[in-house]
Length: 181
Length: 181
Image 1 (cartoon, rainbow over the protein chains, first blue to last red):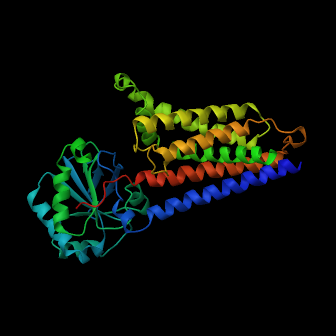
Image 2 (cartoon, helix red, strand yellow):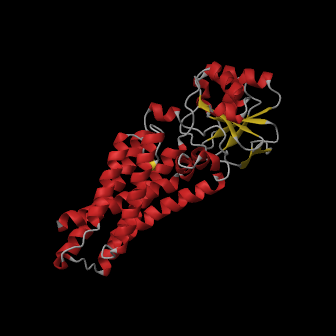
Image 3 (cartoon, rainbow over the protein chains, first blue to last red):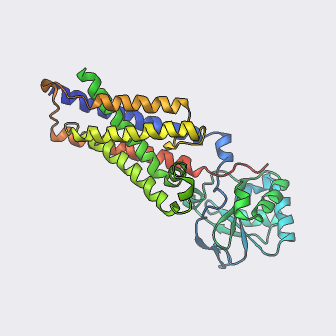
């Protein structure tokens, strides 16, 4: 009997210790600036599908009807990144085949007025959810993900400057196999 | 000697539960490792079968680990664990010889190790432990677990497999190429 009790105790302790260790390893690797920079979805993977309506009641979907869709993960704090706003304005002006939507993590009445103030009034503002952010593996913004009409991710990155927006758009234009290299 | 045999048995069961659970969270990554061991001539013919093979190996590890931990009195499970350890050692040896530094996915996305002398030594230690666990116990030390002990060990095994799977799944998702620069 003593052996059975000993084995059971050892098994339970080992299982609990290993479970805690693995969860701890994951937590450590997923926290910190380096880990946040690797958020998002890898190029070529399938992006989440959704249908959301904007404040005017217009329905937007992903995958998009247009060849390319830019999903912006941000809120009114985009005002703190004027260079990103500059990059987005350049994208809107130069790419008529690109659908741009901004997804909020939670409802924010300030988002649309702030975007209009930044000259980004054409960007459709959609109210998402923490779950949708998790589906895209996004924790902090501003984060951009390009999705093509087949629903595949073409480019994905946290951005702080306009040149990053432009470069991400260039990467999104590459064939998926080339962009994965 | 009895203590060593039982400790080896419990440790191996925990190892295979964690390893199988983590692999289940990233079957695609593990399938890529299996692909390394497919002869070049056959690579074009087997891709659809690789995820199934990966799932089968991962599931076999979880089941063998779980049964070995929860029903330690079953001697045939020791032989199954020994066979799995032999396969692991063979894969580590071939990987070290032919695919050095390629990701081994031994613990799914929880492990960043590539095939190396270290992984080969680890696999040989696991093989030695599996051989030790096959030793016949002294009649006085035969394990007779009660229902409560079985339930406790089953719960611990389930918790460990779920924790390894969850942690590996979270890490596997962070596959984006990083911040655009």
